[in-house]
Image (cartoon, rainbow, N blue to C red; front, side, top):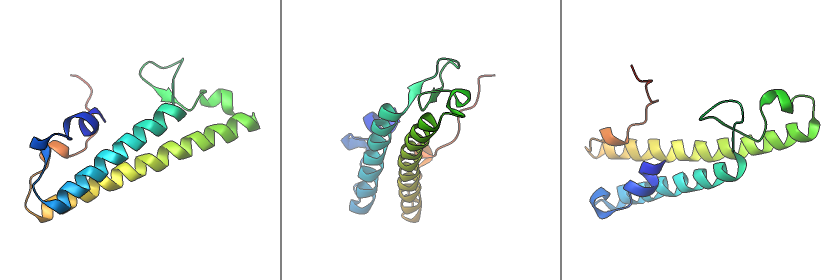
Length: 115
C-alpha cells in the first residue's frame, strides 16, 4: 500500500491524461480508505509473526456469539475496502492498456518467498 499512498502521488507519476489521472486518484483514495479501515479493524496477531487478524485468533472466536459478531463485522469492513481497491486497480490497468500504456510497475502479484 505504501507505493499507492506515498509514491504515486507526485507529478512524475501522472499520466497527463485526465481520465487515467482520475482513475489513479481513485486508486490512491481506495488505498487510503483500505489502510484506515484495516488499521481500525485489524490487529497484530499474538500467535503468528507478520500476521494480522480481527482481534482474536479463530479458536478464541468460536463459540462466543459476541466475538463472532464483532469479528464478522470487522472482517466484512476490511474485505469491502479491499474489494474497492482491487476494483480501482483493475480499472486503472485496463483503461491504461486500452490507451497503450505499459503498467508493469502497477501489476499486482503475490510476493514470492526468498529462495
